[in-house]
Structure formats: structure tokens, C-alpha cells
Amino acid sequence: MLDTILFPLEWFVATIMVGFHKAFTFLGLPEDNGWTWALSIVGLVIVLRILLIPLFVKQIKSSRRLQLIQPEMQKIQAKYKGKKDQESRQKMTEETMELYKRTGTNPFGSCLPILLQSPFFFALFRVLHGLPQMADGRKDPIGPLTKQLAGQAENSTLFGAQLSSTFLNSHGAAAKIVTMVLIVLMSLTTFTTQRQLMTKNMPASALDNPMAKQQKYIMYLMPLIFFITGPNFPIGVLIYWLVTNLWSMGQQFYVIRRMPAPGSAAEKALEERNRAKGKITKKLTVPGLGARDEDEPTAEAKPSGTPGRSNSGGQQAGKGGGQRVQPKRNNQRRKR
Image (cartoon, rainbow, N blue to C red):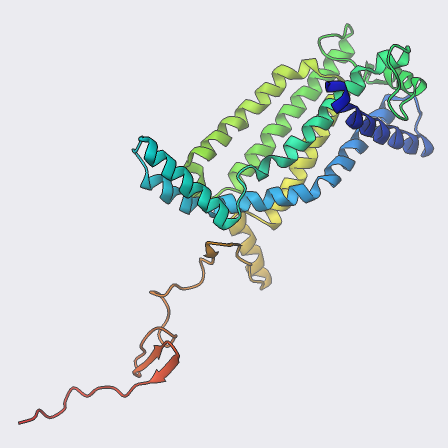
């Protein structure tokens, strides 16, 4: 069952890797060199991340909507705070779902790129794990990854370590050192990416809610999980994971700098840069909530002479626009 589901993805992974391998070989790299196959894995990451850019854009929009509706979410939570009866919980859920529907927010939209990358990750794991079997004929070739190419990939080394080697099944020191270096780098890039998101692209008000606390736990927990599970993965998979983290870090840095979250430190930095260039920072809006523009004066704080306020000259705005009304005299003679 699993083989049937993953075979198309394995075929896709093998096809992309072989395609980049042929391209690098054409450029003069040795076909049986570990760097050639490692760069082919890097090419696989680039192709996958380019294909996922539309989903990444949706992820950004979903994250922005979630951040913009946080004040409304907090109002709903405060409304039902301390109420643990079934009816209150049901009403709280209904109001929350209504808020999501009214603003077009998908709370799971930010997880789509990660979820869609996972099958390709496992497909690459199975391709690299099956290289020895394909090389000696115990396993059928996968698409253009023939028996000969599988043998080249299996025998190629990177700093003396085979790409299909893991920390646990390797006997030489080279494989263990390369594996541990990749695991450490992978864990550090994961932590840096999460920390960059929380410190620069989250408003101060959002750092106190349960979702932010959960992300903080994930920031410390995910590198630890990778450090524990990393010794089970082949070196080629660790390369894929590390390059994916580096891509995510760079992509996130670009988004934080150019499209920061509302109320975050990155947004203030963007406003300062735009102000220095004489540009106006465009405020984000969410359907169902109205415009978010902290710089626009409210109805109670509008300057004199604007519609909706009476100025010193006795000008008053009505529904149909501002009309002059003759001021009443306080010194009228009283009727005797």
C-alpha cells in the first residue's frame, strides 16, 4: 500500500536528481563524485521550493490574517473566560468559526507547505535507502535511476562518507563526523528560523497568547527532535533537510523585511525605511474587520474643520455634507 502511494513521488525525486546529475556532468563534474550527487539533491530542493511558492504565498496571507484577527480572538476568549460549561464552550467555538469565515481565515493554511514537503522527504529517504538494493539488482530501478546510476550514487562519497550512510549503520569515522556536523547545522538552522520569526515578525501583543507560547516551545523542541532522530537518516536526506532550512531562512528573511507582520518590530523598521525614502507604508486589511491604519485619526480625534466635527466658525457636517449654520446669538433680547 505504502509502496503504491509513494512510487510516483519516488519516480519524481529520482527523475529530478538524475536530471541535475546529467546537467552537472555535462558541465564537467565527475559523474561518480559525491559532490555531483549532493548538488543534485540541492537541485531537487530548489525545484520543490519553487513549485511550492504559490502555497508559500497562501501561507503568508493566512499567517497575516491570523495575526490581524488576534484582537477579535482575544475578545471572544475574554468573553467566555472562566466558563467551562458545554454551552459556553460551544458558543465560543461557533463565534470563533464565524470569525474565521467572515475574515476568510484558514487557521491551518500556514501548515500547507510543511505538510506537502513531507511526502517528498520520505520519498527521497526511500530512494537513498534503496540505492544498495538497486545497485546489486535486488530492487527494480526507479524511472531514469538505472542500476548503473544507482551504483555510482551508492559508491560516491562526500568527505569520505557515502550519501546512503547513516550515523547508526556506518562503521567509519568519516560518516559519523559528516552526519553529526549535518545534524548540528540542521538543528541550528531550524532554531534560527523559528527565532527570527518570533523576535522580528510577531507583535508584542501576540507574544502573550497561548499560540505564541506554543510556538516558543516548538522553537526549542524541534531542534531537539531533529538531533535525536537525525542519526537514523542517510547523509543525502540530511543534506536535503539542511538546504531546505537554508532556503526557508532566506525566504523568511525576505518576507519579514518586505512584508512584515502588523505591529511587529519588522513593520516599524519598514516604516522607518519608507519614511526615510519619502514613501508611505501600505497598511494591511482583512475583509470583515475593516482597514488597519493606526496613523489615521479616529472619529473622536479628528482635527477641527473635518466632516463630523463643528469648527470655531460654526460650520457643522450633516449626512449630506458640511453646511453652514448661522450661529445662535446668546444676547437676544428677552420678550417682555
